[in-house]
Image (tube, rainbow, N blue to C red):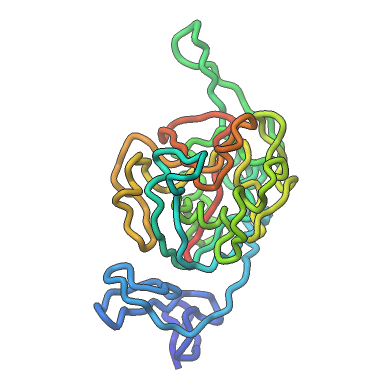
Length: 301
């Protein structure tokens, strides 16, 4: 029997997580001896495949100060990230197309709502609108709409939100990497190869104007994720590098080399449907604000 060092309950020797409290039992790579995540399918240090007994995971319902939200379980796998040169809508920073292998993870069913943000932080973000006639900024409060994605959330503010949420829930939420975001938007292992997130019909995921709309009003993708490619850009953990794909590692990639911008995924102007593809890459400075900036939570398994 295996003893959990967190709650001291007894578990089967093959358990990856404590059956009583959910605490992970970390593993060691049999090839290099490094400590690895319990559900890893390969060693991130030496690349050796890890043979583990399959454990069933399910989606999670999380509560924070009386507000609930859903995290979708995404089974890891290998996919081709980016676009090939013969794609008519390909952008230079989406190339070269390359193989990426991801571990299992969780990602938010929807973007973080204004309701959840307010429950955690006490208020929704202030949006700053530049008034070019004068120096500085004119600030105003966003209108509170509970069932809408939170708006005008800079990366730094979103980082603070995640830290507060983790203290409240005891979880380890984070930003998704852009590889995780693209894999999830494509449908993960359930992908049917659609051009957009869950459809080939742009109108099924698009809104008629460049504005913010309530969550879960459009068609979800194959994983049950909503609004992956609508008008709002979602922050990812990676620093933005135009040429990152040319040096990206295969296993659980994330660009940690600091630049002056972070990756944004999913923000699309209705006039430019080619940007609604899950492969399209955007970016913004960490303190950048605006009504079309938001976040979607992720969490490692």
